[in-house]
Length: 112
Image (cartoon, rainbow, N blue to C red; front, side, top):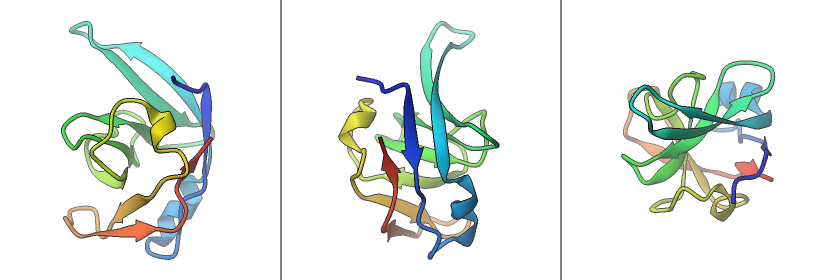
């Protein structure tokens, strides 16, 4: 099940910049150049996207609207599947520093 939109309230205590990405994310489905179906939720008013990243088996958030699997800023608890409804309201984690492998839990995350 893929809802048409998700409401995001990112915790900005660990990374203050995340609060600016909170808001409504709208479902977009695209077929890439090799025919793979890519599902993402794009921030309604600016940059940022949420999508399922198979490489880390988690739903991820990135600053870019282009690719949520590169430069991951926040991610759902994993492993999980491509069903976003399973991670709505569940724990998410934030990466400390753009290049860091250190992650901390967020109090608030992705909701429907």
